[in-house]
Each structure stands twice: as C-alpha cells, then as structure tokens.
Image 1 (cartoon, one colour):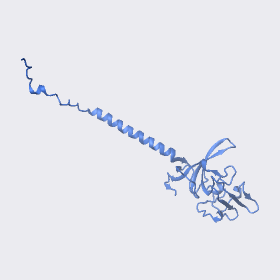
Image 2 (cartoon, helix red, strand yellow; image 1 turned 90 degrees about the vertical axis):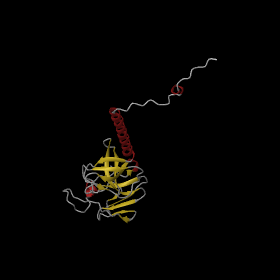
Image 3 (cartoon, one colour; image 1 turned 90 degrees about the horizontal axis):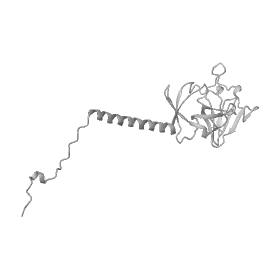
Image 4 (tube, rainbow, N blue to C red; image 1 turned 120 degrees about the vertical axis):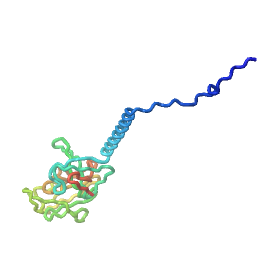
Length: 219
C-alpha cells in the first residue's frame, strides 16, 4: 500500500508569523501630527465662537454719557447668558430709532427694574426707588463747559412723567422693562427722554462685566 511521503516538520506547521510592518517615515509622522494640531485648533475656535455667540459679546463705548465710569472708545466684554437685569448693572441695548429708521446701541446704568417706581427730584437731585433713596455714587453732574457742578441741568429735564411745578420725575417701570440713565446725567439721552424711554429687556445685549483697557471688572 502506497503512503504519501512525510514532509519536513516545518512544512507541516502553518506560518504563524505576521509580516513585519514597515516603520512609519518621519514625514508621515509630521503630517499626522500637523493634522492633529489643526483639528484641535479648529475645535477650539469653534468652541470660542459658540461661547461668545451665546454667552459673551464685545462692544465699544461711543460717546460721553457714561463718564466718569466709562469713556469714549473703551472696549467692554458683555455677559448675556441667562441674564436678568439688576439695579446698578451697566447694560448695552439696542434702540430702534424710528425718526431715522435705524438702530443704535447704547450703554447705560440700570436704576430701576420692572414694577419699581422711580422718582427724580431736579431741585435736590435725590433719586428714590420704591421710596428708598438710591445711593447715586456713580453720578457725574457737569455744565456745558465740562465743569462738575453737582446740580442737574434743566436743559435735560424729562419730557414724560415730569411735573413742571414740583420739578419731579416719577414713573412706575412696566414689567419686562428697565429704567436707565447715563452716569454723566447732564449729557445723556436715556429713559428720561421719550426717544429712549423704558428699555425692553428683550433689547438688552448683555451686562458689562469687564473693561478691557484700562482693565476693570464690574460686579
């Protein structure tokens, strides 16, 4: 009976040895690393854009109405995420200018919020909110020659909710609105004027939390 010849032992076993991969070239490693860096940078930029779109904004002060707290040309960082206006906040908001059919962006200080009653006595300069004297530590009262006088200018008397006899402005802020004034009271177009009036909270872009130069953090 014929038998198949025996093969050598090494020919009976399968080849279990994997082929040795060729070493990656230095050029391939550099390109791979470069793509990783670019990808990380792109995601970082995307994250920053998302944060600034929904949480923070940058704006620039235009005008003198917030002196001596803010000055023309200064840059501000605004916080807008889940923001609820509070007294003394410095806010930036859109103003629809119906006279010239355009929009402006203003920066002012919140004096009273929705449901509160604010009064301003032009003879004494005293402001009250819900009957309590407002500590007006930020105010700057100047005359036409930019000299600090400490008195309100009657050239900037309110054109609504104002009693000519008592020289007192008094109004209750509607819910969902805020009453604002510039710190430079005699050189500010604000809620005392019908061209601004009470500010709709939906028009608020955010609260100033940081002045970039000179560096100042606002509470």
